[in-house]
Image 1 (cartoon, rainbow over the protein chains, first blue to last red):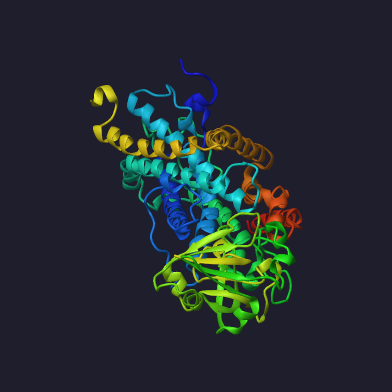
Image 2: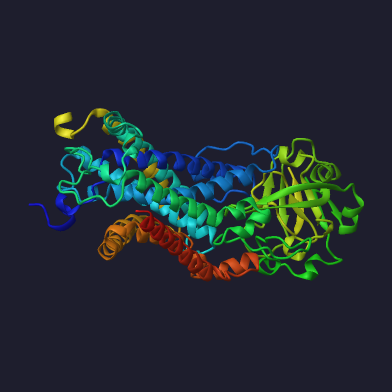
Amino acid sequence: MTPPGPFRPRFWRSPLRGPWLTAALGSVLLVLVAVVAATGFLSHTAYQPDLPGNAIVDRGADLPLSFAWPAGFAYLYAVTQGLHVNVGLVAIPFLLAKLWSVIPRLFAWPPAASPAQGLERLSIALLVSSAVFEFVTGVMNMQYWYAFRFNFVVAHYYGAIVFVASLVLHVALKTPVILRAYRERGVLKPLRDDLARTRPEPDDEHGGLVAPSPADPTLSRRGLFAVVGAGSLALLLANAGETIGGPLRRLSPLAPRRQVIGPGPNDFQVNKTAEGAGVTPDMTGTGYRLALRRGGREVLLSRADLLAMDQHTARLPIACVEGWTTTQEWTGVRLADLARAAGAAAGASALVRSLQPRGVLGRASLNAGQLGHPDALLALKVNGADLSPDHGYPARIIVPGLPGVHNTKWVGAIEFA
Amino acid sequence: MRARYGASPLHLLAHLIVLPLVAFALLQIVERADAPRILIWLGLSAVVHDLVLLPFYGLLDRLEQRAAGRAVNYVRVPTLVSGLLLLVFFPAISGKGEGAFHGVSGLDYDGYLARWLLITAALFALSGAAYLLRGSRS
């Protein structure tokens, strides 16, 4: 016997639920999620996990997907991660609406009429769990709330593999249902109906989405799309300013990185403070030496030595994994010149080590293309002034298109391969 | 096959391609020291959404329908937009993420709650104005 409450089809009364509505919401969501997933895996690649010291996800347990991240387009990571975070926010209302549209299926009775149905429900459980998990952890991470107390990068990465795999399966299995809904109802035709003409979809037999005893509609289908779209727009406007930067930053009222700190040359957003990283003035004072290493050879350079070398200026963004960007004018020594000073061969990669005694990512490797780019610098100044301690004094890396945190600050050593 | 399994062989094959990939990802997590917490969050995600969040906003919507009747959308839309902003930006609005945020940026989450409240007031004000305009036209 069917249990009472939500397990009875008559419990569900929305006149809008049906195969067309779910197909339409799902189609929009699929496009958004495809962007978020693609940029997410690109971001994983941008960290170049196959170079020494870069992997956060253990290399032996990772998918064999990576390529040399290029330096040719300075805003590459800003665009990649800006899309990941902001399109992710836009997708949230569509995800919630999509899940609302199929909620009666959660209470289908009997739970599995055949082995096939049981298997499919298992894959749906994986899909919904991983989808909610990915959005929840992503949203928490962009606001620095680590209440989950696990390694975000690892969990978000493997969660994404579960999500994408079960999503591909779901789309493959549902394509006939989606195509039938569009064929029978039209792709956009149901959006033409105003409230007075909004009727339930015809009974979908085994689909279990159409309410057998629907209530009167209070919203048309296009009204539902408008409301969901308004939610997406609100989330986008609340955050996008921190991605675009400049005068738009302050216009996003809830963006974590909306603050304009001041008019000074060093008054821009900091990812890791000197205090937080444990960097003290005695580590960066007159005794500071940059070590360039290759094989057993070592060259030591003071900040004055570095300032005496050819100086180059470039306007480059710092683009953080959390989706915010800030563009500044950096001046310093070309990394290619330092490679030459160390006697490194062309095409070498390099491991950059920070002086920071604590905090995440105290080292990062750069590939040969990045080292050779004319705008790739060991920056000594920003906007014409010496770097502040929080921005990496005495010297920091700045490379076009690189994930923000790989622009190592307080550089103590560069080891060329 | 169809009679006993309940679908075409392709259905089974598709699952047998994807489920091992899922098992691969989950196995990589199981090896880790923080695995229990990851798996609990993964498992609870769907449960909390399906059995807590969704029933909660369904109930809220029903209450609004009862209170506002035919004008329900004038209450429903600002509630939904304001609620979404609260849900997504909860760590900043509530200040929950402030400790770590201050550690990395040197900044604080000042004024987020105030701005969310002002946005909420503005959304309901816009909705109220739309309701009055609609009323005066008809």
